[in-house]
Image (cartoon, rainbow, N blue to C red):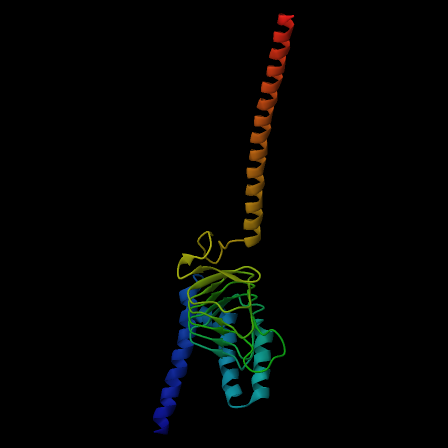
Length: 249
């Protein structure tokens, strides 16, 4: 019975590690071979070291777990607290500067790019880090802070700061982050989105100001033309009256 249980655990670990490798091939076109991925992908190394550190953390070997997580940080540039819970197939691409907090929960098939922070907002106790559901993509430099939930299959745009809950199948951009697409429908009149072609709310506001200024300029020019025509008509009327008065005398 013990041998069977050990075999099941071993197969479960192999399946988990295999899903992490498959995640790299699914989402990185530069990946060429399993040998290359296993040896050179720091995001994969960070995930695997975290899985070991998390196992120690659950066994209450807190100090040893933290030592391993710090070693991983030194080697990969990615800091994952051993208390964080990570699902299958997490892909951290070019992960330098990624920080994942202690009470963070990450679902399956999540993609995280460099400079992402999944952090807290202060010294509060208990659940203080985000919950990221399955299939979420978090682009470069995004900050997701506090005990909030990022709904499944959502996108967080590069450089965004997310402080509120995000519904499933949504796209969030800006500082603070705001939902611009939900369930494939644009929440506001913005262009379609991917990780690169994200709308710039500041630029769009300036563009709307520029359009309003141009509209006002056109109205002013139309008013000036109308005023000029009225003045010419008045002058012609005065001249005609003077000529009529002179001819009468």
